[in-house]
Length: 380
Image 1: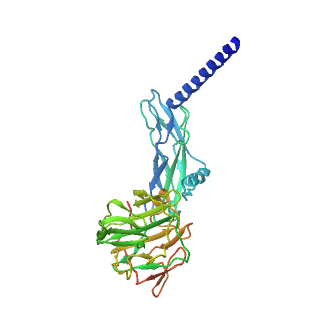
Image 2 (image 1 turned 90 degrees about the vertical axis):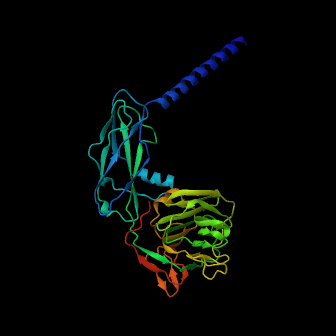
Image 3 (image 1 turned 120 degrees about the horizontal axis):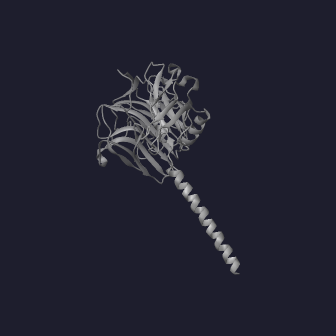
């Protein structure tokens, strides 16, 4: 019996030493000097009509060292693009690696410094990229001096060929009223629009179903000040600040029914959020779905005055990255896109009917005049 106790004690002591050694190794590993990219994404602003551009690439060290650290960079394998898209719900196209050159891929993090000297990544063939499409190029950092941080050794260079929107719809007392197919019920949804107000009134309709799910600006009769963006109806909440007038803005509202999460966006950035507990809504209910104003509404038509473009309704909750990536345009055949008015003069108009680009739905209208802008829309 005594021998058993001795053996057990030895065994437990050995395990403790082993676990202690493992913990020390883990701690040492965490504290070890490593190289990594400070950001996993590098958003590149493309200049119009420029076929070649240079991008500076740099990495950093987790801890200071008393000696130089050598690093090098390479264009990583294209398969990483597919993995990135799957992880983030994006639809980036792979940038042609043949058009990406790092003339001098080696660099040094000098002793006592945290960042490497930048190297130049030259991107060419930019004029052949398709407007409205976003491209991505993975770049890997390596070092012969110290390890890299797993998962942070890749930086994704993202390029978006800008869409130039020069024509937009004019709204003074104008509207589009849409009838969705019978039985339509949006569990999750997204509304999006580019808006430019020439001055906020007491209640201004962007789009939606009055009393059900409407995106509007202001509701002085309901205690909401002019300029405050609000989603209202079965549920409601507001933006923390006023939406600027005489300036182009992208606004969006998403609702993910399974999680109950809803978010208001301004220019691709979260502006306000809330949690709902609703099954969804019928866009044909009550006075139906309207854009620009509530035509014939007995308690006031609530018109929007100014310009609008890129009006979209989705039957899915778009992700943060999708909202940010596609503010100026999307593929009309995108999954979940149920209604799409670009309002750039491309829509087919027959009498008082204007066809949408996503599902060819009929929208009744009193006529939307198309204005030509002096400069393309810019969202910042």
